[in-house]
Image (cartoon, helix red, strand yellow):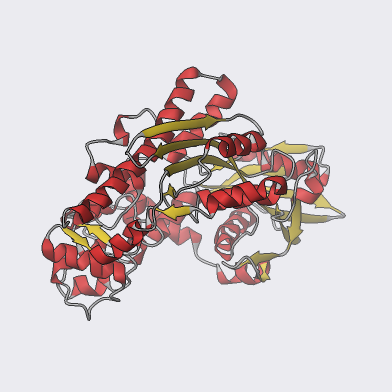
Length: 484
């Protein structure tokens, strides 16, 4: 049977949908869904006679329950072979009331299409609601000793825009989302074998993130200096149309010509490495010893599990710290907590981190510095000590994100794992845990099992992150020393 996610993939790109049928990559959720949103809705409204939908339910089960006057929560129905889940439906005072349920704080306008499709299938099954509302998580709720579901959830009749501001009533957006689902389903049923069909590249291929099937669709553009690897560029598609398929062919007028793009083009013309040595030397001159290489791991909770947390707050559960003195000697400190370890994490970090010297992190402001600022706000008694840490931070990603250093092998990327593989023989692939979301998944398992093997794997992964920072910094230093 078809699901809403299938239609979403198909309308994005028919070949994307086709590939998704052939292979399904492992999904690692970014968020810990620590409570069932439908159970919370049930408690919020005080429902008793409820059909709570389950995976694999026969669609007739929900229709029968509706006829019997039961409340439907996440209940499956179908039209043709397209299945949807009715989020929250009940009958009150002779009216049929529908609530769209969102496990997010600001349901966006883009959600209206799925809502329209849900109503379409409901109508085909003879269910036409008299009232339509939404219930979602309250972003401003702060948990106290226990969870207050009536404060944690909130009801609204409006979707939100990308700035999280109300952006019009549900009905207005539903009207704009009308489409012929029958025709769409028919198209999907007659989808041909698209493996040999050459698609034209478009912004959907790289918008927000590069499609996981990009290399399958465009194998000829998989080389490091492909124009498709030009970062922050909307003009690369025009370049390709003009026959400019390699960054080395760019003269300058064809692109936006940002600093990073300049570094990419110059490296491509050299078929190797671009270094703005004056800028790199200036950046390195700011370092002071001892140098602390720092990395955190954390998980994000949908519903705040502990006091003073808000929806989608993060809880930092681990750090790794390599400390280098002026002679190049390295020492290593690490921490791994459990449950509500926020204060323990803070105190352990403060006790072990040097009181002076540079603290190097990768993507500082979006990660480690932000985490410390959040902790300082919740636990102001530690603010002064934490501030002394984040104010000494320097971002190791900056020489790459600002175009000071660019190696063509980066192929438009400059994440920690990519750089480590370029500048050393080390690789995350040999580790049991090879990426951050997998580390979070393993930590969730650790909370239930207390496995020594998982603990060791987490220590090894986080420790690799800070050692990778050591390798990258010393590589940058060598680029300057080579000219001296």
